[in-house]
Image 1 (cartoon, rainbow, N blue to C red):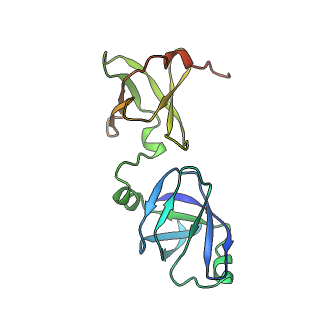
Image 2: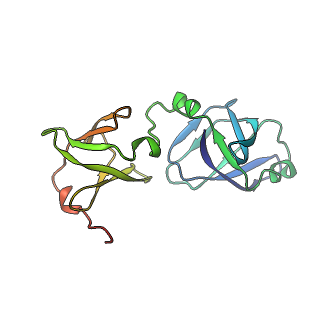
Length: 176
């Protein structure tokens, strides 16, 4: 299961809820089963009543659920988390890579096959995500764009990149 975010409030009088999230861009179609509770082990199943799209720049998204038709019913869900099975997210978002899948991956220069470092952190950004690669010199931000990221092998945890000119110049030392 993957946590989409936390229900922080209601919107209007027809049972819409506000979800605060920071996962990036995720689409789920109407009639998708989601789970709501204080943990993934203690949650109840709900059905989306309309398409859900989490935009990269928004921190709050509106969700409408089937059988939640009043502000009071929606209010009862406040402060609970929304969970979706990983396979459901992948089914509707084929290009998604989860943070826990990519962190720890070895990064290689596609031209020389030399090791650059290891992905240490992921930043979810409005235009494109950024992977921080821990190198011997410090941390190097890698923009997750087609011009840079050439292949991702999640099974073997290997990422091959084209090392754009200037990327090595923006390596930051630990603590800076």
